[in-house]
Length: 395
Ligand code: SF4
Ligand code: SF4
Image 1 (cartoon, rainbow, N blue to C red):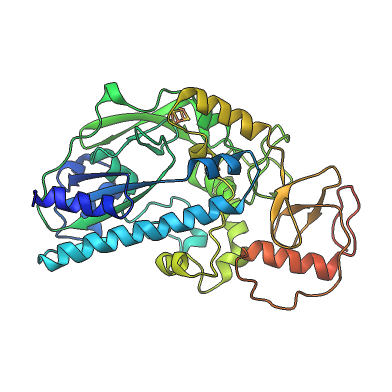
Image 2: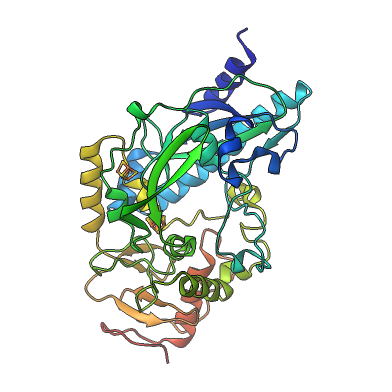
C-alpha cells in the first residue's frame, strides 16, 4: 500500500506530474506573506506541490519565432493537467475526511489597498505562491529570474499546489550544492523590458532556505512586457511575440510605470470583458474557445537545464526578429514591409504592409483570438485603408 505521502505522490505522477513534493504550513511560516497556506485554508497543515514540464521542442520553436500558437496550446493543456492533478488529490483527501483547497493556477491576487480591481493593481501578490511551496517541498529552487527551476527541466515547468488539513511528512528542499541555477544571467538578457537586473540582488527566505535572486523592476514592468503592451527590446532588433509598441521607453520610476500600466489596462479590451480569465481562470482554461495568449515568458523559456542550451537559446531569441500582427489574428515575424500603426488603445501595432477591406469581420466572437488583437484588427479594417511601408497613423 505504501504511506499516505507515497500514494498521493504516485497519484499526481500517474496524471502527468514530473516532480511532486510535500511541505508544511509550519515550514512555510518563515516565508513572505504569500507563502502562508492558511490565508486560503485556515486549517492547512500541509501542502502538496507538483510540477508539469512544458514541451521543450515547442518552447524552442516559440523562442526562435518559428511557431507561436503551439506553445500557447501546450500551456493551456498543461493548465488543464494541473487542475486535473489538483482535483484528483482533492478528491482523495476529501474522501479521507480532510479539508482541502486546490489552489488556482494563476490570476488569483490578494486585494490591494486603493485598487478596486485587477486593472488598478501594482503588486500582484498571489493568494498563495506556487513557487514558494515548490521551493519548500523540494520540487525546485528559485533561479536568478525568480522562476522555479527543477533539476531535470530547468525553468520549463508549470506549478500546482494543493493545501490540506492532513498532517503529512514533508520533503527537504534541494540543498545549495545541487542548486540548478548557475547564474548564467541569460534570463536577464532576454527580457525585452529589462525586468531582471543582471547584478543587483535581493534575498528571500522560505523553509529555512535563503535564495539570492535578481532585484527586479516593479511588477507592472513585467505586466507590460508579458501582456504584450510592449514587446520590443531596447536594441529594437528583436521582440517577444507581441506586435505592440509603446513608442517610447518605459519610465524608470515605479510610480510612473505603475501609472502607465494602469492606464493601459483601463483601455485594454480584455480587461473590460466581464468574463475575462481574471474572474475565473479555471473556467477559461477549460473553455475550448479560449486562447492561452502567450507572448513572452522568455525569462523562463530560455532557462533549459544545461548551460550550453541556455546560451544557445539566448542567441535564438536575439536573432528571432520582431513580431507583427496579421489580419487573421496570427502573429508572425515582421518582414521588410511591416509598418507601425497607431491604435485607440495607447499602443502602436506592427502589421505587414497591406491593404484593408474596410469591412467589419462577419462575426464579433472570433474564438481563439485575443481581445486586443481582435479589436485592433476590427479598427484597422474600418479606419485604415492601406498601410504603406513606413510608419503612419490611422486616418
Ligand atoms: S537563465 Fe541562468 S541565471 Fe537565469 S535562472 Fe536560469 S540558470 Fe539561473
Ligand atoms: S515574462 Fe517576459 S517581460 Fe516578464 S520578466 Fe520574463 S521576459 Fe521579462
